[in-house]
Length: 522
Image (cartoon, rainbow, N blue to C red):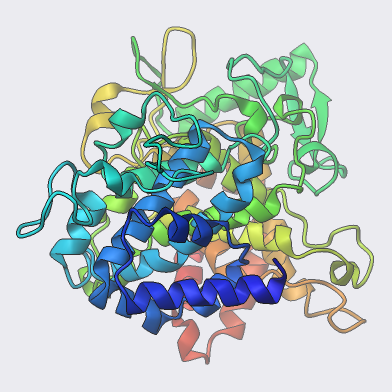
């Protein structure tokens, strides 16, 4: 099927969903819909906002089937990650990314709707006045199609093997399944990362640190994770450990020993996207730091970002960081791959070098996919750090010396594992890496506009997100502020912040940027 033919076929399918009731058992229609090759741009163009709202308001049964079947397929690809179904899974990701904001528009933080509530969060029963076969109910037919065929075809069997946990998963809300599936897919072998063995034993040699080629903590996109490894001598390692202990003591942090808890160690380290905080280049996989999965990562990050957008539909003056159930699922202690996701997002952002190879206009000849990944990573990390309660910076370890969160703390309402990880960064090496990364990226704001050759250096557009992340670190990690004041050149970060304040001083649309710059300087 050619590009124009597939586009027209997708348009016809969308029109059919809006104009007529399509049965969940119509395997031919749904199977063909998911297999139509469509780009993200085509999905967003053909499912217009008007079409999405009409589908939600007039044909909710079709929307429920679309949402349920797309979710079922993502869960299935997580259970059985065969690469022949990756294109079909991407179609599901794009459709869900498009329709989720319009569902959340009628969610509990927007104009609450009983049908949307039951579809996203209901399990095992139908809404009042609807039968067991209705959308959102507990009928097995709602499982819809799995990748490669229908959930119940003519012979009553799926054309793909089902996972052993499908029966348990069917008792979980679709909202939870969507978020968990997206977090699984961000570390799916051969889809967003390389093959790996989940043994948790990928440790770097003692004394290994990651340095940029120039010798400072930081990174550039060369080699595994854009960094080289340097092995410290035993004396240097002891000196560094002593400095870290003294910094904790100066901040009033005392290490507590717990019998057990939720581990904060990224496992396996080989799936993290870039080296830096939490992982050294030695701990990445064989092709660590590769960019060949960037396109798929961007697609799934968009889905996860869309799933966390429901606070946008609440009045700004009524914002409650504890109100969003979608975000609560994403930042819970049991969220899959949450620790690896935190370090992947943070290191992807801070290891990026907008100067590239240092040749003028080199960015014009390179793909902008990685730049988009950096920007999306910054946006998503800001969102995930903006909900729940602040993390405790008090270090807690188990008997083996691994950092953990006690079960009581992890189970309390408002717990956010991403904020806890941010507050617990306590290594001088990691804090230097973070500071140098912020300096390099923020300097790009004025360096890209002060070149002899116009537009010869690419400009990073996510500087506002970078400032928010910088403020979050200053606010929640007491060691970071002390490290900057005692170990770093503060002028390196003050200059770009003052530049942004000066450039935005007369722009009413950038008053928020001026405020965050003021907060950082104070």
